[in-house]
Length: 439
Image (cartoon, rainbow, N blue to C red; front, side, top):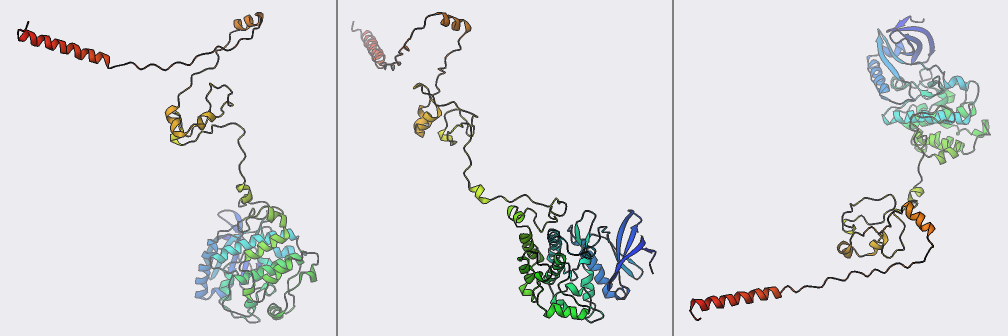
């Protein structure tokens, strides 16, 4: 029977059910938006320990901040009912799409990449999904895929035994260690399940099929890994190596993470894009390839080749002052680090001094001997002078020779001093003679 209300949410219809929970479509009376409400099965919610685990798992799900995980809005209790309120994904599920056959290879690779990034984030937080299947991959109206049902699977698997009637999970995609009821499993179980889902996406059928659930579980344990050529011979042959490693019977033979598997798929499906833009999509961002889905803000810039960085930069198109920036190599009055935009070409005039001439002078002599040169540029010519030159017959004149200035002769500074001493001596003698009345 359909409940009328759960918490503050009006129940509109039943979306689906499983062995662990029932999902309803509800209406949020406060925010006036549709929501998905997952209610834990009554037989599990009656146990106090299960209720504690449910609350703990609900908090853990809310901590997975990844755009490929269906966000949880609220955890609540209504009497004996335990429920989670999540975003309502209006784009349907991957299960609905696979009911019409296989999806395009690029689309399958894009979904695989985005879901793998979300699983890697959950695994880094110590959470194992344990029930990856097409029904748990949902789409929004912009065709972005999301993974749902985190946490509850861990709760249920810890609460029930592996029997024919109580087995939890989806046998078509379950890892061999889960089928055998092993207590300890890790992220490689999710790698197996996601690889099985990818196999279903590209071929249109699950890797193993059987009408009996227990027989299907045994196929995962003992049957050979399925071949892509048996159901989809037109696919790239290199994809078989990904299926072989992702669905290896022993966890030690599988990819270490779902991300490693998704990267290999991308290299095969889109070799040009992954080579030309290594890391451009960054599979572990929240983005999704633009070949199938709208681009996201988490795409990174294209990688830069280190060969380009090793190339010598081209010379500047304009002349620059090539004086050293050392303080002791600069002429007086020139500040270090100052570079004029352009310097004149070296002059052929022997009287001119340019930067190249100055640089050729040794450093010590440069500091001692450098003197600013007088401005020898000719004065501007007036229009009257130009007109007079035009009317006067041209004569070839030789430049006047200017004799360089002679050095100043040294003047003798000792003669006046000697004369002064002599005069003082004479005066002293005369004074002495007068005192003694010699004269």
